[in-house]
Length: 177
Ligand SMILES: [Zn+2]
Image 1 (cartoon, rainbow, N blue to C red):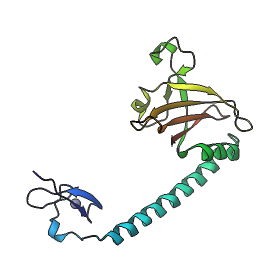
Image 2 (cartoon, rainbow, N blue to C red; image 1 turned 180 degrees about the vertical axis):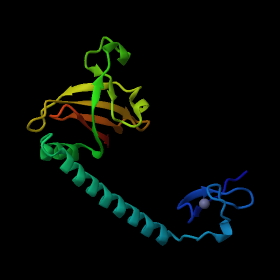
Image 3 (cartoon, protein in one colour; image 1 turned 90 degrees about the vertical axis):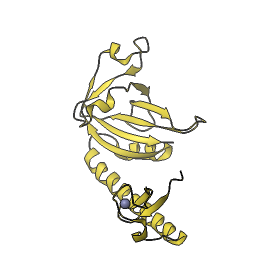
Image 4 (tube, rainbow, N blue to C red; image 1 turned 90 degrees about the horizontal axis):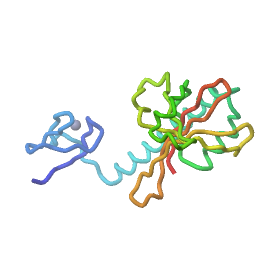
C-alpha cells in the first residue's frame, strides 16, 4: 500500500496520512490542509534557518557570559568555530568513575564520567570519554571527547566534548564535522 504524506499545517511537519486521508499526528483531514508550493517551502526553509542562526548566536552569546572567568572564552570559541559545527549544552559537575567501569581497563586515556547535575544521567552511562592533551589556545591543557561516525563512509563525525573549567566543572559541547 502506498503511504501518503502531506505537509500538515497543524503539526507543522510532513505527516503520514491514513487510508481515509487523516493526519496521523493530529487527525486533521488532508482536504483541510494548506497546500504548499515550492516557493512556500523555500521561504519556510529560509525562515527556519534564519531563526536557527538567530537562536544559535543568542545561546552562544549567553553561554559566553556564563563561562566568563572560568576559561579562556575567546580562545575556546575560536577553537570551536575553526573545527566544527558546535552547540553549547551547559556547565556540569562531573565525577570520574572507577577505571573498571569503562569496559576498557587497559586503555589509560579512556575515562568514564557521571555528569552529576545532568537531568538525563543515564545518557552518559554508555560513554567513555577519551582524554586528549591539547594546547590549541592559551590556558588549554586537555579536554575529553566522545566521538562517533555519522555516515557510512566514516568521514563525518559527531560527538561530545567536555572542556575543563577552572572551577572544577566542565563545559559540555556537542559537535559535528
Ligand atoms: Zn497533523
